[in-house]
Image (cartoon, rainbow, N blue to C red; front, side, top):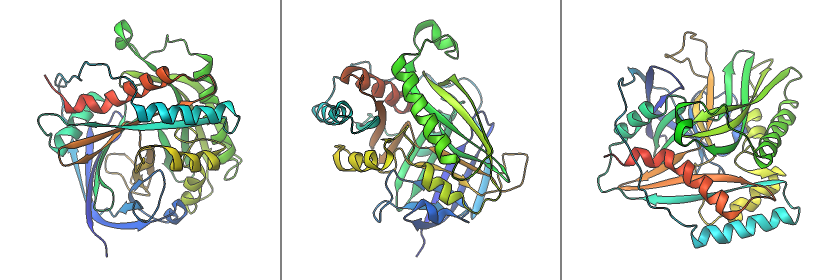
Length: 353
């Protein structure tokens, strides 16, 4: 029995957003996305109580994005120290790196916000569209997943026909002061950030080799996302057909940018040891094999993004998620501050002067 669901979504730099409404289908493996069409919301770990959900595009409405200067949003100014749960998780995860169990592993956490005044779902979405023109913005509600919102810079898989692309995005620094008026191109990257991004890029290249012999990598380069900058490499590649997109997604997801290496061992360790289950954070979402009314081509195309900088909305409680990639040289304080900077992306939407 299917159930109704909806999503608002807007692509980076687009002047329109789409409202999609439709019935849902549940899947328990990315492989089962082969041949499917609709808006997908996938969790970090697919299981019966948090399945991959495909919303059928029964009704599509295209709406112009709001124009003008964004309202003046702010966050609470108090500095929060690492929680006891985060300290335990960091010590546990970092010990595995020092022992050589993993080359990299991602530690995530969740923070609950309860603003004095609840914000309507659509208002949250429109605020994000104004504040974050460079990002993919989506607000998704399904009976299976609940309500989630993301403002993410990371493409998992995008393309149509034979032409496809993905990216390797890792490394994080915060823009402050005069640099907020720039794209961060003058930032100097640490060895830790450069190594973290190279691990992700190497993994993606190895995944693509299983599906194509024709791919090209460009980068890394510095890109801005809200008040943060990241290192990004772009991969373009060809596929002989679209019949195995689900198989490709099964191979790519989760990437080391949200999981770790070796992938299978890191994934198992995260699921068993993180204090807060990730649910749909660090999964992926977006339209799969759909004609897009906001693009010039009517050919079915795919635009799937990793669900970063996201929150789960339950009544008047907002659960914000963020994570950071740990290497041997990582420190607790640096990683905590990185997650605080990432949480700010969603926090800004909840508070206004």
